[in-house]
Amino acid sequence: MTRAEKTTAIAELKEKFSNSSFFYLTDSSTLTVEQVNKLRKICFDKGVELKVVKNTLAKKAMEEAPEDKGYAELYEALKGPTAIMFTDTANVPAKIIKEFRETSERPVLKAAYIDTAVFIGDDQIESLTKLKSKEDLVAEVIALLQSPAKNVISALQSGGSTISGLLKALEERTPAE
Image 1 (cartoon, rainbow, N blue to C red):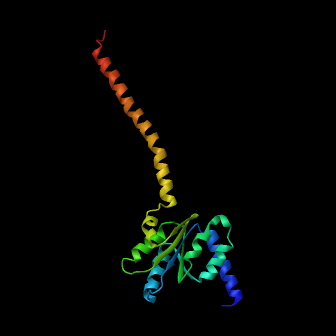
Image 2 (image 1 turned 90 degrees about the vertical axis):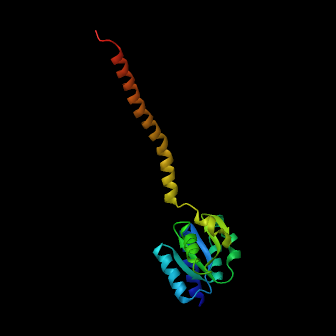
Image 3 (image 1 turned 180 degrees about the vertical axis):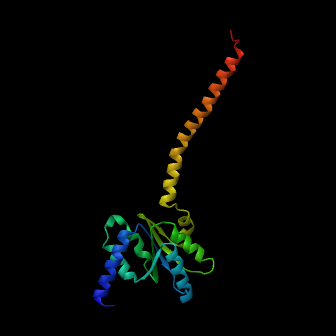
């Protein structure tokens, strides 16, 4: 790889890192070509970009990012074969890895970067699959906000029928003159 190619690759990775709040560093070595192609297809179908990278280039791209991104914790994971899974939904790569490993021993999670939080090690897969997507969180907040309003409306509606029922009963009990 020439110096110009390395510079281009670093620039591309730097842009990917800056545009992605969620990415996973994985080791998919020892997978057969057929398995890698299957993994790539699953990733593509679920909107995840799988990119095999050289560790030194990935590290240089991360080093050029602002320090507050917190990439320094990931440097230790950049050893051995590395494939990066870029995504817009935090838990999708974890679900892909978990599902894929039902039939294969790889890919192995080296680290995950979830909106400045860093998860190190393959033992984090289970907790990463349980992360909620932005859409899930928004739906929960809306449901929570709607709940009190629904209770008030329901109480008013049932209270209204109770009051009218009471008035009707009182009216019937009073002799008409």
